[in-house]
Image (tube, rainbow, N blue to C red; front, side):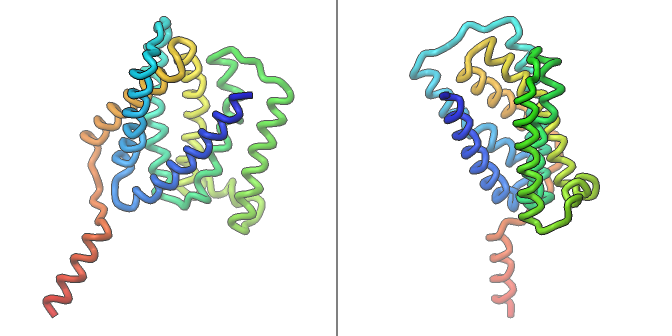
Length: 225
């Protein structure tokens, strides 16, 4: 039953990260926000690993899973930040709930996990609940969330994130089975940090004026007058 508490902690932490990312995207580019989100846990994870001295023996599938999951997670988090930047959180975030739907198809392929009837029912309840919350929060019609996937870039990008997460979740399980949860978490965040450093170097960074810059411009105009 310990998994329930870890899952709850992960959900709370993820929501806090989303709020901080949305706030940060007002002043920085999506690749820089994604870099910060990836690099921030590294000192804590490394410190715990060194203190506990829990270096695992690595299995043969560790490196392939790390390279593939790291690459896809970089793409997913970059799309995630772009979706947050393009839309309100209340409009974009609920589409992550489609991840379990995609897992019904990806899990048998990657980790050979058979889907049970109660699993399907539970997943459909989660998606239906998120769908109803989306309708109630926006006071829209029943088909509005589906139309948003077509007409608005934020939901479209977040739906692509859900699809990628359905693949990386299986790769992460393979990585954990070939190392350990702590070592895999440190490995995947490190490889993602390297990936976003490359993106930050390769992609053009749009100029986003910070609030203090606007204040200085206003003060300069007043001083001239």
